[in-house]
Image 1 (tube, rainbow, N blue to C red):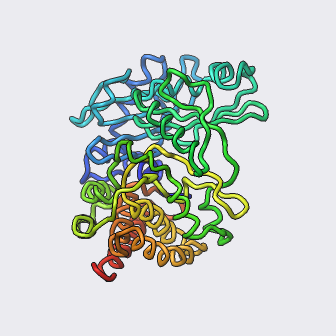
Image 2 (tube, rainbow, N blue to C red):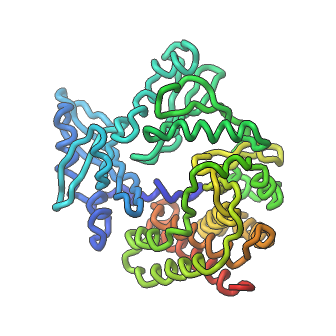
Image 3 (tube, rainbow, N blue to C red):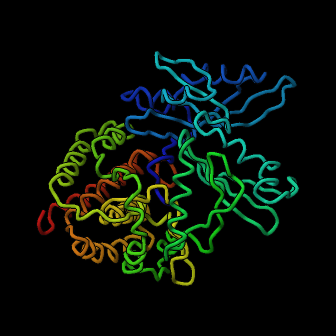
Length: 421
């Protein structure tokens, strides 16, 4: 249910529904992919029968990537279903890809799970390898593997189960696993509930993490049954270890408002002027308003990365961004996501939850050395970053994207009206 900025931007699954005003995105969602996909299948002695566009991942400055579900025919005429990745990102040439082009645009393609930048993804999806190395020699017949998160060319999460044992395997870019292990070790020595590191991925671009109890906070928020308060969340952030200040800082979402505005225009090409007003307004306030001192931050703090059970927080997930930053950016991450969810599900308890958290978070922003306007401006930046991730569901893609944009506009207006703005 949680909106995502990096992997939920598929259309209705009908090739050709992309925007002609934005060639890269339109190309990866359109009928021009027929020839590149057929090329990709040929070495495997497969013939393309059909495909459905599933998701688009638009990373400002780093290319556009799409996933497609492909149906192909083998030499005996039997149908087989598989997934293909297609990207305009030149970085993909670091791994094994098909290099081709369509409509004058260079393209790089691969068949899942052979992501060119995630060389250990095939390992993480091998029951034999995981049974031996993660579950201590478990029979591969009893190993169950499920991809629970995948951001092409960036990372993947695989849920692994063998009998009563369960683990999560996080596959990252080469060179990133050691930093991720370091972050989990820092949290293990703190009061923050986070997944413990498990053995099994030594020497690989991956980590193995223990499962934690609880359910994602978003479920209780939507149902109106959550007992988690703003004080619980700020208390969790207070417990982040000071040693995280020595880690590398990752820019906050709101600090790239113009880039996310351009990505949003790819989904809403008829609203470029409106989107530019929002991105420019966010950028101006982010530049003008004091964000407060540098402190340890989670870096991607929102309801989807929080587990709860029995009225308490049982897990803080996705700690790749742990490091130095501003407290209001963690608060803004939660507030921006919640504002989008409230717009997308107005019939749920989420609008009331937004009201319940906004005031206390504004107070917390002041206590953190910043201000309510700075918090809301940065929350607007988070909401804007989620626009390009819109996809069809209960709403069609454009309506979904417009509601996300409206959430950003509302937060920006509140920032402008607040004291000190």
